[in-house]
Length: 66
Image 1 (cartoon, one colour):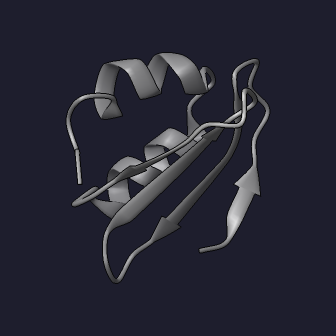
Image 2: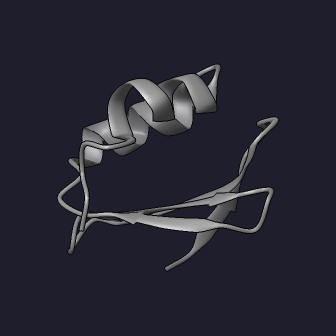
């Protein structure tokens, strides 16, 4: 999965595979988390959000566990 670097205080990079609908979030701490069944429009909103960590906490974390 290709990871794209993002401008965020806590998140290092984000990757998405539209075929499997799998989202991967890598934090600057080195931890990487996988999320399954994520709709592509949500990934796009995530990438376009002004605050990546706020979007992550509100719409992804604890919602799309693999």
